Image 1 (spheres, rainbow, N blue to C red):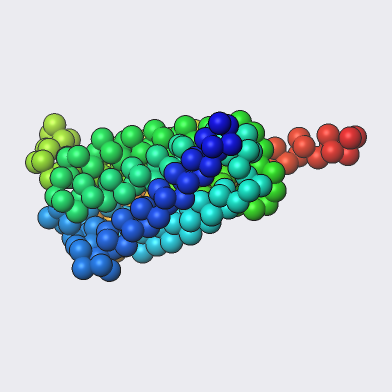
Image 2: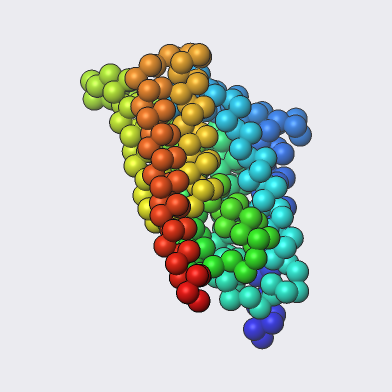
Length: 268
């Protein structure tokens, strides 16, 4: 019975990855659909809000999807069938893949309001998945890259995407910011994203993947506000400061962790 449940878990992850790739193909407009940035009245376009990253930022999905497909295939191999770590990771990863596809469909069908609870739930699932990767070490480099690395990239980017998504929905709904300036709101939201990056760095003890994708998104947000429309120097500066803080803290924690491990290895 346990062997059967393991095979079911492996199959669910693989099928979920295939569905997510199909969803991304549709979302890109390659299958004749409307590209995400043009769907829902362009609410998620790079020039829709002050929190929207420039278009090149979305290139981060290529390594994320490649990593997810790689993980889905790798975890389906017999060697991972009864692995305790994969038993814990399998269904949360599958849930994140299905939620990603659901988010694309909600935007494609002009249900922008529905995209918010979907992406918030996706973020919660990825936080849970990230915590699972922190609870035990990967067996080898392949698992480090395909499981821990991919999940980290995925989580960091979805943090940025959630901020941009919520802002887009509020702007589309006519939210006036309670009288506060758009620049002020943008700086506040970027500051929250930066704080999330700090928390991920501390929780992950300097893990690089979440810091890379979160910083990538914030950096392209800064580019969009400095070179595109609508412009916002305060938002751009706040984003660049957040990137600097996240990168410096992550590297500091990583180096500190490496120094603490070295003496133990030397005396082992």
